[in-house]
Length: 361
Image 1: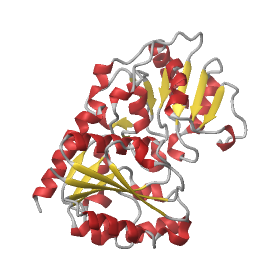
Image 2: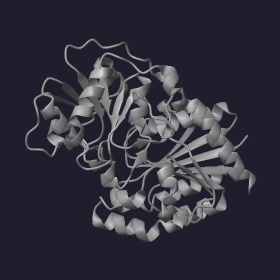
Image 3: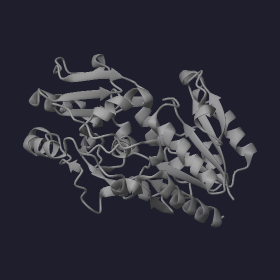
């Protein structure tokens, strides 16, 4: 048995896909015989994180904006240290004072979810330069690295620090999703789940596709119409803002096709394993992507249309998109085709890797 401290900085709340992933990971680690405690650093005031985490104990350290963002982190470090974990699993983020010392004291593993330098370049100036100057203080002291894509694991700005690594694409709890019934829409319906202000989502490309296919309906979850930058939006795009899983499930049931990120090139990425795409597939909905999916890199899946990862990938492939959508309209992806995306399978591999890192102590 290991005592695993899961350390995260998270401000998007317990209903977010990432937090659901964290809870499902912790649940599986406990099932595999480990003691797990989640340590959250957040600026959210009133969320009840524990309700979403089942048996996994939760410790919360809140801060108020930039004034206390750095000073309050020391309190969380102290809580982790008092708990005396065998290993620390940290979702890689910004450097905070005392973090490097904690990760050096205990065997620690970083989960790398994005190309941090490319993504930070899209942020305001100070944040990028602060991260550039301090990132090595976290990267150089960690013993293990879990990358969510093979591409990330091969980035040179990580490899200079990496001592041991493994690639594990994102997974979800398949048991929580039922494959929806085959829709019988008069006209095709496409669904997209995302967040405002994420350039790599490529929502501007969805606008172009919607304008080209005026008879199709595009359901946009997680985004308000007012949050779109385009001055004019096609009338066949419907915006719902942020919804809970229970609220957007009826929309999923109606969807013929789902759309993943179409502009990963803006984040300098060619490969990924987003949670929303795993959710689409768990519902049985075929998907259109603008990048290579980590868990389908070895073989082409007929229920995934992978567009070239370039700026004009939608305009240049309108006919291809139309054929794919017509072929899959009214059909569903079978569960056995995507079972390897299940958290149960992925967390066995992750826990074995943690044990190997602890064993090197």
